[in-house]
Image 1: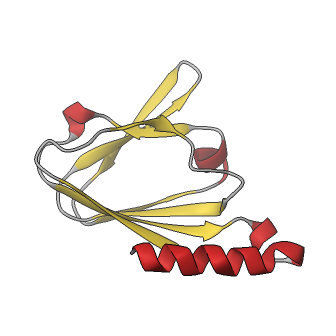
Image 2: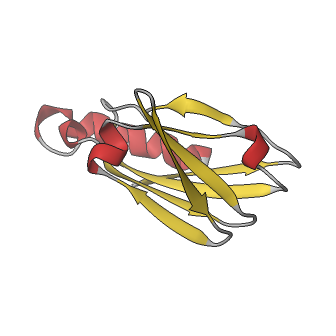
Length: 114
């Protein structure tokens, strides 16, 4: 798996609605929200679900929550300094078959960025 550490300053960066890349990242995303309370908002067409992310909480996104619902963090939900760590696993195509070597290179590059 690969971890990305994101630290945002006071009233820091909002994250627009998005999907994490399907072609690259696997079934699960694990987010650890470390320093302050916030919310993760999920969107599917016209439906929105706002999920609390308390300080020192962990959320696992998988199945529909990973592949059908976009997610975001709204600027108004950032009340103070926010630090989070997201762990991602490679998609299956980089774990088996002819793309395994590519997967190893991706992990090597990601490890240098942490």
